[in-house]
Each structure stands twice: as structure tokens, then as C-alpha cells.
Image (cartoon, rainbow, N blue to C red; front, side):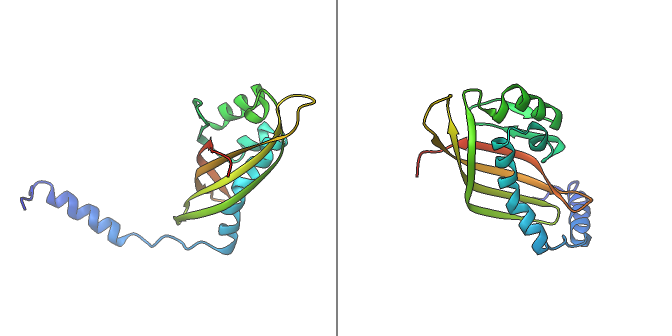
Length: 161
């Protein structure tokens, strides 16, 4: 193995800093509950047609990637796009939602989750309700006040179970 000696001191410094860093704080039961509940809060904001509530779940520079859609960057842009197309669905209204198969992980002030979701919607007035099935992948950061907010949310539609 050949070692570039000019890189070795830099590598030694990085390893020393990492080794001396304090361990990440362990999550509390409240943290786990808050992280797990974020998907439900997001879907409820969609069902309620509440763009302000939905945007408030993101950090200021949060990112949202929707099924076959553009990337929306920033809390203000997320709120604006939701106001233009309430529920993100210009063709109908969401009536109810449900999450399932929730997996969370991470450490310290960063967390991720992925989960399945179902959204019951009516495509147009007088139409029969139908269910949209999808999956979320999220990244969250713990805030100084102890709350958790989305850094990034990505979701897509999946086939019926």
C-alpha cells in the first residue's frame, strides 16, 4: 500500500477530531415519538389543505421532492406551491390518510424515516373516493427547542398492496 505522506497529517487531524468529538446524544422516548409522528402530521396538513401547517414542518431551507415533480426548495416555496395547488392535487381533495410500516433511524440531532402511506381522495365532485398508495423517505433535524423538522421529504406513488 502506498501512502501519500502529504495527506497523512491531514488524515491524522481529521481522525483525532472525530475520535475526540463528544458522542451524539441518545434519543429520548419523546424524540422517537416525535420523529414517528412527523409523517402523520405531514399527511394531515395535506388532508386539511393547510399549506402553512405543511410548510411549518420544514426547516427554513427544507427540500421537497414529489412524485415525478420538481424539487421545491425552501419553506416559503413549499408553502407557496401548496397554496397554488391545495393538497398538491389540483384534480381533487384528500379525505383521510394513514401511515404504516414506519422505520426510523439516525443519531443525535439527525433522523430519517421511511414509511408507506395511504391517502383517500375524491378526484372531482360527485366521484367515488379512491385510495392513493405511496412511500415517504424523510430526513429530519432536531431544533434547539427540542422539536424535529424536515430537512428533506421525498415521496412517490406505489402500486396497490
